[in-house]
Length: 148
Image 1 (spheres, one colour):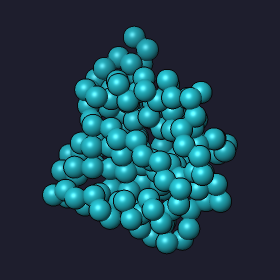
Image 2: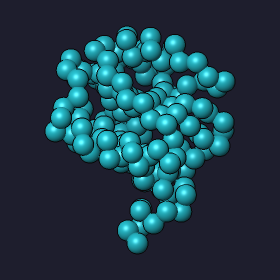
Image 3: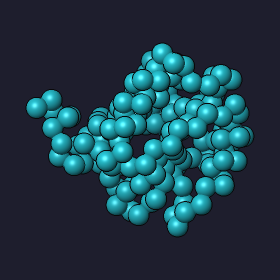
Image 4: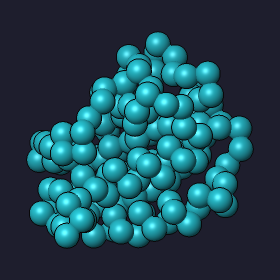
């Protein structure tokens, strides 16, 4: 499965969190292909999403404080079901500072919350990548999740 992790911000990546992002992208390589993309506007993100070509429709997931809350095991089951359904790609997007538009919510398949607190874009991407990695290790029966 291909995972596209993107964000909308006026500035690009911060070197403060880059090493942590790279750690999880590297770990995820055994489970999925990961692409990271920065956009300046919501419109640019959805134009990019529309250009993605594959046999199956792209699954778009918006990170939003008001989105669905998952425990790690539930998120793993959701991701596993997505993969088992034959989906070839999923796009996870950290939104604009003012939040997602109603149109964006209408185009997405899922709004996902990482918790009730507001996180910086950089930190949200690290938490998201770690949770995606954790989900794949849960599905694989790897001891990462249980700490053994």
